[in-house]
Image (cartoon, rainbow, N blue to C red):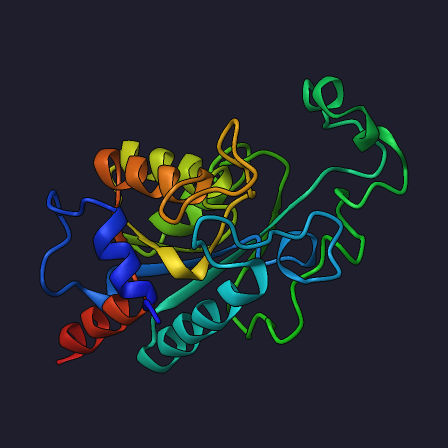
Length: 237
């Protein structure tokens, strides 16, 4: 069976890297992004299935939890986000035009719903701030940048979903602000958009892999959870 590491090495050109062999863990922040029932729990209203060899929502939770446990063990700061809309629809904006069903008061895309809650087993610890957002980027109209700046963060590590929407927009915004961004690929996944004209998407294609290729080419280093663990262990020495 092909391992995720073999898939990543095969499908994403990572020859252009800028993260050094060791990093300052005291200036590193792990951003647990939108690890919510909506997309990652099999009962979620917008559950993400595996397409093209990408992790399913449930499969992405195992590496995400491993990264969180490692971060806590090494004293790396963790910050959480929750994506969703206000139940009164006041913050929908143009999304209300593109997705009219989101205007319904019982929309699963609202904050405060079961779909909007963190997945089972993901519990922020004391001192791990949790903030709500209503757009893709965690920097948009939030205090996220202030959370990073107050501890002189240098490295921003992103886990969570989705790899095609919130992850790349946050990575881009972080890169533009001067943060050295690391995206842990198997700790997230993306909406299963099929290749036009095909019933099934070939391995290595689809929104997930295309987004990872673009992230790596433009504004972050893409790594596996195993590679990130090795980086942290080297840096801890």
